[in-house]
Length: 156
Image 1 (cartoon, rainbow, N blue to C red):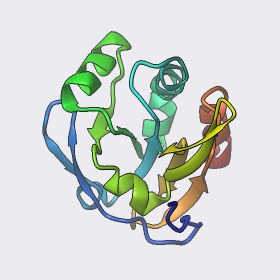
Image 2: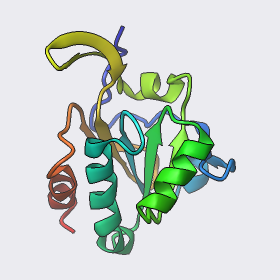
Image 3: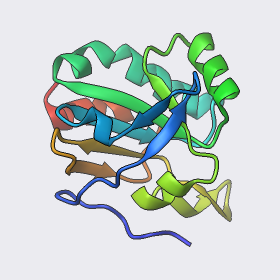
């Protein structure tokens, strides 16, 4: 069952997750700078690779504008490490195996997958300001062209 969706102006739910190197990363620890969180279904799948590589290729202007980029999936640290190394992803990938953070952000729920209604990850991206407030909440995004849309919203 999907949780309530976040909206512009909502406080971003805090979390602490483990990254690809099994280090803890918390949203609170990133306060003072902007954060872009993108939730994706599975490491090393075609659509998720496209999206992750688009964020990689846009990282310099996003960082110059003050944003930290983080990818979140249900994959374990070893799989995230392999994905990061395989595709030269220069940002952290976080593991949310029980989808608790997905739930908090409304990025888990029912969706259509190849014509079937299934429960799973809803590809979503959130832009969070330096104070921990959601600037943009983008749900059901497409892997291709999505990062260009984020850059357009941010003017970078």
